[in-house]
Length: 233
View 1 (cartoon, rainbow, N blue to C red):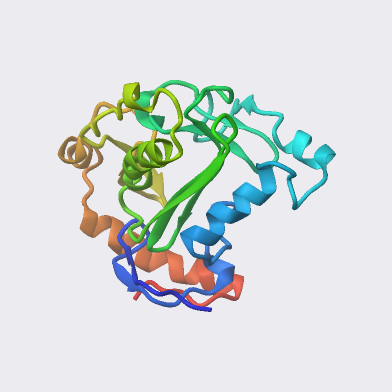
View 2: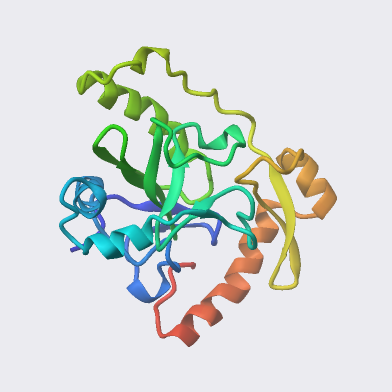
């Protein structure tokens, strides 16, 4: 099994990714190589009617969602046992309600050259997976999730789909963070920052060139220590 399309990486170093070793594919947001169809089927079988993959007791434990109190998504994400709550208008800035019609239970994906979002809609009884082959636009999967969900709702004749509006994508915002001892601008997933890319680079005295250089200087050594082959060249 291999990739059928290249992933375009900037966040972790400029490159086209055709080959990935499982040891470097990310933490809980990676370690999986599959088609969107198979991932959607996995979530339907996991959470959907009959929950074919785990016991009812295990699924109940997985879906005990509580707001995260620490880390990069503190106060912005409800998390259970390997599952998170998302909504088709995720960038709205609200804490998603697990019981909303348009909330889905699943997990985001983020690895070298790829980002994705996927899950099961408990109120509507269908699952969905959206994959983008870029790693530098944190909104990419969510931008597609809403319109694709509305298409599915229309097809399944789910009442009220016409009244749901996809929130227009806003200008991406960035945070100045320190990685490997260097300041750089990274995408702000939750709208906490008011800085656009140019403003962030000015504050950070950083640039895409600096990000790429820092990642190239540091990431291969880190990956080598993990026993994986790096894809940043």
